[in-house]
Image (cartoon, rainbow, N blue to C red; front, side):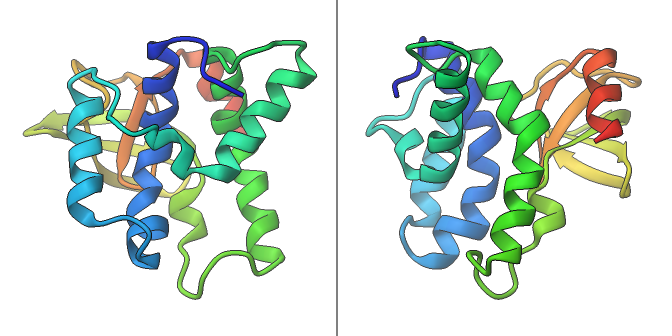
Length: 172
């Protein structure tokens, strides 16, 4: 199923690209330079060439299934957020349990988490999540301030979220 708009593709990639280093680069299906180019493009608001979103078949399949459940013909922002914010961690748990992830896969880093920005500076923020304080890259989320609620995935802030969404994620 295709993405509804360019902005939806960018949102999908802000959540999907952070796991590419651990999943696609380590497995040899994508080079680090290709990943860096894709991250640079998305951080500048440009969709990378070559249907990069298709490199994430599990996330694509899950988003397509959610869109179908919702009676939608395309994957939109609501579908992407439903998957990455509320269902992604369960999918990761299941994949690890079924031994579908490679040895050394960091399932805790792969789970999307809600947190709050504590400190901002130099292209990074310090965010407190249920795992404690950690430094995250802000390539995909510009203009963050202390106290902002954010969604993090691996070592990136994927986007700023509202407080209600953060609380709902933390309950999961």
